[in-house]
Length: 277
Image 1 (spheres, helix red, strand yellow):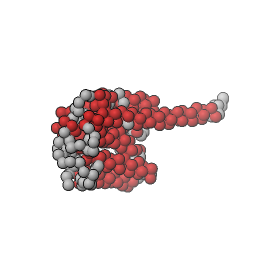
Image 2 (tube, helix red, strand yellow):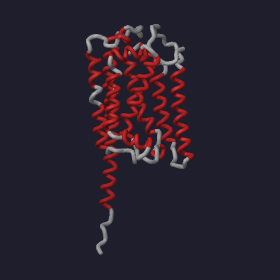
Image 3 (cartoon, helix red, strand yellow):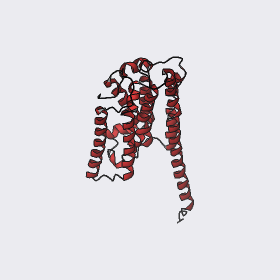
Image 4 (cartoon, helix red, strand yellow):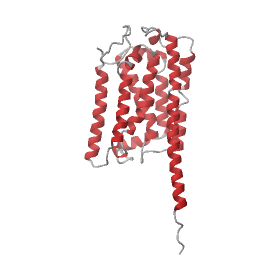
């Protein structure tokens, strides 16, 4: 039993392993959400529906899947492709579900002071893109990845950075009024911009002639998966999965925006003309 998923020299086994550090983090995340919900309800600021709970539960389970056995163990020190799956879950898929799990009434009431002002500032396009892209590039530098993933603390640091950068990326997209600072069309452009920079590490991993991560090159092999084939799969997953997620989100935003525009146009057409005096 180890505290967190990290690189080991042990041959891979499909025997289940316990990672109490993962369980503690997941318990704290769930407890924080329930306490947040309880305090909001006690303050009488609004209701939390079952839909919000379902969104949070889905995101919470996705985070757990990314961190715990077997994905966390495989990505921690055996397969670069599973490391990419962790990145996808922690920064691309789980964060929007977690953010949608909090109703508008759950956020600070005043967006001009304290945490409200911070959230309002982060709802612009630049903070999210800068945070997400910076973390993406830095955590895929081979020398840094090899150094950090060798220890449980370093592995946790990368996982936490991916998760927080994912929250920063998706907050401008799902931020409710009065925090939302960009329109639906601008949010679509924002998500498209988020697909550009990941092309660089994805292409680097896919087309490199040799394994670039010493960690995964020298790791005990899982089945018959060669290190270079595993790395190529990691690069392909980075684009083949992440881009469709963004395009699907852009489609949802476009549908919502188009539906609202049509409803407003229809309301204007049936509205009675103003009376002349």
